[in-house]
Image 1: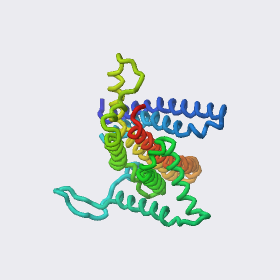
Image 2: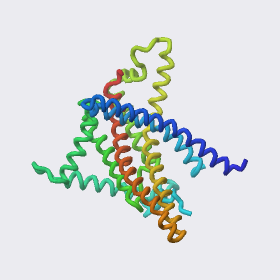
Image 3: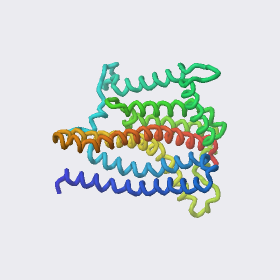
Image 4: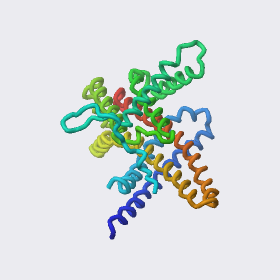
Amino acid sequence: MDPIAAKYIGAGIACIGMGGAGAGVGIIFGNYLAAAVRNPSAAQGQFGNLIFGFAVTEALGIFSLLVALLLLFAL
Amino acid sequence: MIDPIHQFNIDKIFTIGHIGNQEIAFTNSSAYMFGTVALISLLMIGAGRKLVPDRFQSMAEISYEFVANTLRSNAGAEGMKFFPLVFSLFMFICVSNIVGIIPYTFTISSHIIVTAALALLVFFTVLVYGFYKNGLKFFKLFVPSGVPIVILPLVVAIEIISFLSRPVSHSVRLFANMLAGHITLKVFASFVTMLGAFGIAGWFGAVLPLALTVALTALELLVAFLQAYVFAILTCIYLNDALHPGH
């Protein structure tokens, strides 16, 4: 296979990993919202935990995006 | 063809000196760093100390309160001794990200070397302060209490790996978010010019990507602040490990 074509296909495949991060971030924000609607007074106190969970989950999706960017522009 | 990576080029402004064969240059990145620090200093020093704050002073006080509350709730009252570090990191990243959204400017945090330096600073602060304060008890960080002895070696190995991968994820998160966001903006902006080349029909078609670019810029503004906040909150959580290592 043409190496350039393989590079672009690889970058595309690497981006699939972001779907998992998308689902994970959706679960985090969805559950936070569900909990916040049930008990609005406790919502403010959990905002830090929300952002922490979001950051840790998003990092994994960002790693797959990074692999795609490295394939496209660096290698 | 529009090159979406071109905006991240580092250009030399003037040369400061040489170390061996390596040239030490003052680049556009350094210029924007100086500008960021100047902006923060202007905000914090020029805010004034009136009893009834005006808008400028309110901004400075809100940013202080915001970071102080984050630090207190995540690292406890003892964590306040690290306030200067966390506040400097937060303000530096936040202001540089927001400056980077302005078209034709350079985004400092879109370079892995900058974010890696900041993340390693936090990593080594945690490491050095953790050993200074707790001595060898700092290793309790890697041994969670209440784990059955059979799977303890595995858990300890996982804890050590996760501790060592912290600076990687800490730096790559900020860097990749800024890089990806700015590339996306540039790609959508290039759709406008590409469609515009088709004449009148293209101009009407170009309204759509133009509106999307404006919306994305608003999203990037949120991301710029959020990533600075995430960086600060993770710094607080890591510092909490150094202050209170027993889970």
